[in-house]
Image 1 (cartoon, chains in turn yellow, brown):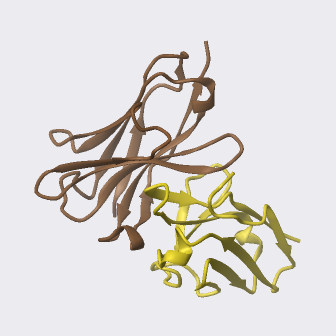
Image 2 (cartoon, rainbow over the protein chains, first blue to last red):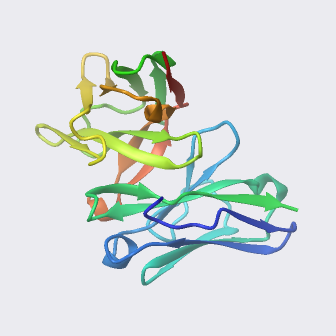
Length: 111
Length: 125
């Protein structure tokens, strides 16, 4: 049972807009702790995709964007591509657990 | 460009100690900015932060509550690396273990920007 809740799977056809939600609580996202997103391709380590809610590291395509509101956050992929098929995880800090926590992960399938 | 290279055994017997090492290149374990973390990924896919070590004029450690008492994360400045030691392991500790650099000056903005390659550790007799 993850502290941050994500849908297990989402899908979309190439070119479509896909969003992945990350629902937390008043002890993490709702407390103002930033949300970060990671992409994990099969057999590889996670890679940061979005940091501090809505910032992209150098090299990450601008079709990836993040937003946050209240106790939730979202990752949007505008114009999804086949190469985006991967697992996506959100991450934040939780004051009740005094540690960093992750969502359970969402598998993106490109149809 | 930071690179993290993990090493350690892939099989540990129940009740024994799991030990892994992460060698750092492109940064220093003694840097005053980042922190050095261990994160694991269970067979079902979930990620769990385990602990970290960092230097801010002296050494500090922080550990996840669910492993506190069983975990030690140690820096080795002579080899520019850090280690994970998790004792009294059970099959539930079977996972892929990652080392990672964490950046962000406060807990609220902290994230993991560089990761090791991962080590599958199986706890079995």
